[in-house]
Image 1 (cartoon, one colour):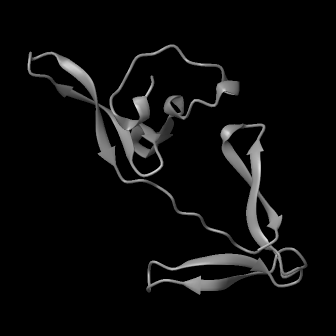
Image 2 (image 1 turned 90 degrees about the horizontal axis):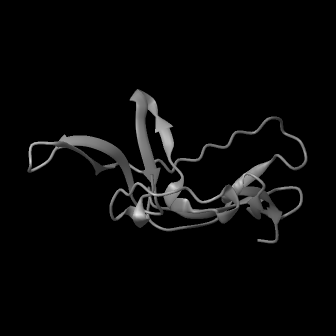
Length: 126
């Protein structure tokens, strides 16, 4: 399946993993929903009765899951992160996660071997 960038559902030959085609990356979520998550919207493949009376597979918008939870393993060097440079209104803040020992911030380590859509984290200059 291909999401056509969130426009419509296509039956399309899969590209190889090295192509990193984000339109062909789907997740199975609770309840057995097949979900495609784009940068700002997510859709599940949903079966419904079409105008002709035949069942068809369509997109149904679902909430985007973009919650990240970080917990400290132990209060040791490299794992003591704090919020820094907090900006914005309550509930809509943006901030950096800064390591108190090195002064560096948690940042993008670049694409992983798991695919073009997977990015690792590392300590980088703030």
